[in-house]
Image (cartoon, rainbow, N blue to C red; front, side):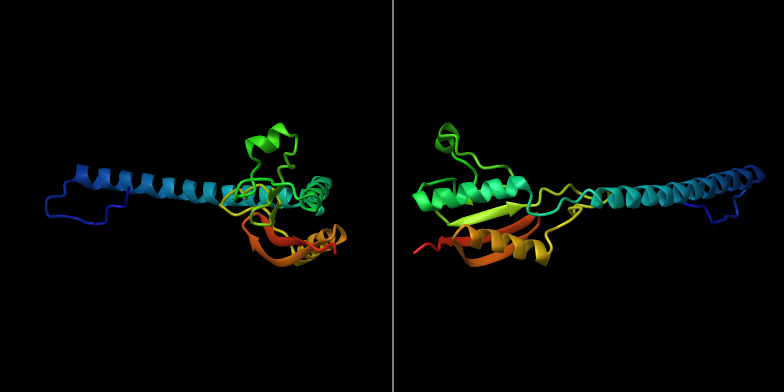
Length: 168
């Protein structure tokens, strides 16, 4: 509702008194809404800070396990994943499903590594993303596994690498 500022020649004492009560109630409600908004903002900021403190060190053991599995599949020439890198039914039946933090498409030669970060309290943004140091560490881990990197790009919840088998 909004404050009523207008007066008319038709105002009676009863209308003036009622308008005053309506305006007083609206101001009181507005003050409560502001107090609530400030409190909610403070609580959400506290939540976001606590969530950010839970950020793991990357790469996680799950990431390393996934990269090991991808490197082995590439060396063996095993077809894996759909064009998004999600396991196909045949992959699941063969027991080749990757950890949920790593996707791989053998057809696109693309590894998609996810941070699996939760969302912030008041936004559609993740609580954290990979840093440049994290990405460089992933590059090093891929190189250790004899995987060459043709290109990479960061996305909303991780980083993708276009890779090739660098073993000669």
